[in-house]
Image (cartoon, rainbow, N blue to C red; front, side, top):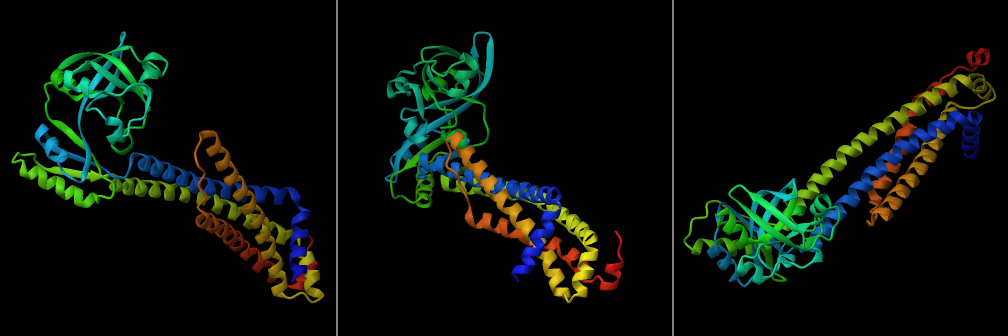
Length: 390
């Protein structure tokens, strides 16, 4: 059996450049699929880490008709609720000098960093005194600070908010990390965020209902049971809220997981096309090899080589090229992911089972594409092969 592998290796070595190019095409195809799989794993893990950092005990309560202060008080009285905070969202334009930026003005209460997980970079968060006194202060996200002022620490700067129904002159008291808010990570894509006391925003816009109430549950509380308790509490207020909707982070994570998996499958399928192209490369190389080695095959058959032996040599050659290409592609793909994650400060993710499946698939495809040339070589008649002059 060792003679089969040795003969296959020697045959590949006769055309080293051609063999190297074929192995390179296999390596590129394998590396592409490995990169897609690992990038999908890193992205999914990053989403999980972000949601876990916010706490999976978060709920969002909303109504098409808006929620009132009475609804907020009813939710805060529930034993399962640790904190509840109103959210009032209004599209606005933030003006710095003569330049305006589209923003979402988010009216919030104190303690927002504990409920919607704002990560403060500079300054301070809104206080209960700001809310009670309807102070004209705000917290902006880092992206807006960089775009409008060219730096992140803009505490003390003035910012004018133009709502549809009023104007608010504010002073920046804090800067939050972009994407650290639950609103920016879980809800749909939105522009820059500016956080102001909800009482201040209500006085300017004249809208006194809340779009959402963000709820953080006590440790050990089941989200499903808490949702039911919240709905019952709101029904007991006797007010009409229209269609109430509650959603927890676990549901959002499942939705994001599903989207990430679908995207990963699509990209993997695209990467798989490159493996098929590599397979056709093996087919072309092996057919050329059959043509070049016709007299050699005739001599081997004349001195007693069997069809099985000839076929085994060609299949071994296809397998060796596939193995070398898959190994190089595997190592390159994993290496690129490792270096990329290190540069961006992410934790690399290597789904071992899926990667091994890709490795095995590459070997199977490569060997399968070598089957026809192997059959063609084994089918040559010794007399005709010996007379071949090509």
